[in-house]
Amino acid sequence: MTAQVLYMSNKLNILQHEAIELLKSLIATPSFSREEEKTAAIIAKFLSAKEIPATWVGNNIFALNKYYDENKPTILLNSHHDTVKPNPQYTKDPFAPITEDGKLYGLGSNDAGGCLVSLIAVFLHYYDNPNLKYNLIIAATAEEEISGSGGIEYTLPYLPKIDCAIVGEPTQMQMAVAERGLMVIDCYSYGKAGHAARNEGENAIYKALKDVEWFRTYQFDKVSELLGPSKMSITVIETENKAHNVVPAVCKFVVDTRINELYSFEEVIEIIKSNVQSEVKPRSTRLRSTSISLEHPLVKAGITLGRSYYGSPTTSDKALMPFPSLKMGPGDSARSHTADEYIYIEEIKKGIELYIQLLNQVL
Image: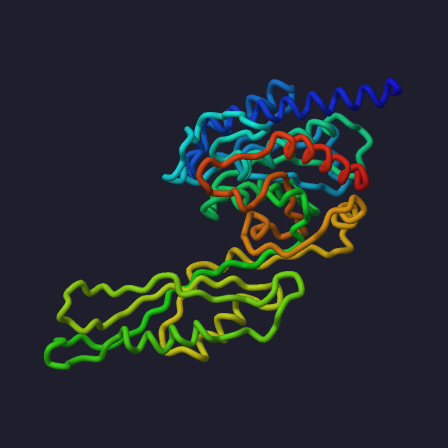
């Protein structure tokens, strides 16, 4: 083993160890969405100890590589440090970073702490390299779990121009090159109140049922090779009326729509409005479907490394990025938000190594 190979091996081992220790600190510190101040402080302190200037905006932390050059293109390395609240079925302390049988347990270990600390390690690996073809920015952001406006969306205006990004989410280090968009729609069916015993009024629930059936059976024509068909699901139905003997005048129901990259939200809204009687009000059109070209350098590098690519059914901060982004990270999405969440230690180690191998082909 040459001195250079030995040096790089030792450097990688140190990065992996530090990343795992950082993750343990993050697990031990509650960081529910909009309450991430303490984990932001941990990340800022970690970077400061490496003599890396970090900027704190809201509950978001970001830093630029040492030799940042505005004339070079820039890659953003991003993941989130907020978590959902612990599943009530936990049998372990969600804030105790317990290691058993090669697994690191704890809330946020898999989603997305393992991804975040791996990307931080990768940023450290390249931080003081003066000869990079791209700049690198690390951003540990907030509010991803609630798609809040105080996370990556809040941070982006503070950053220099970004050309592309790697978004750390648990994908078993395969490449999620596309994501379905998420649009939640409130629908209101209007009738006329009356006394149920006297067969008065016009029942808004019955009117709503016709529209509910349309949502249940409608199929979009355009099917994506990566994401499959777009999908609509009724998830809530209610009336303001709580009396058993009053015919309801208004019935509200909620539609969860997951839209592939072949439709804009505006097209979907028009399709719905032309087929239902209910009033249609989208809550937000922020979380749009996204995709990155299979010819993009990041994706081509991943294919060279034997990584597979797919379309992800879940939504992440990738949806809020107005530039090409690749979702990829250690861990398994199936473990996210489950009781006794965990990530394998080896997944983190391998994730750091694969991220570096991927970027070596680009940088």
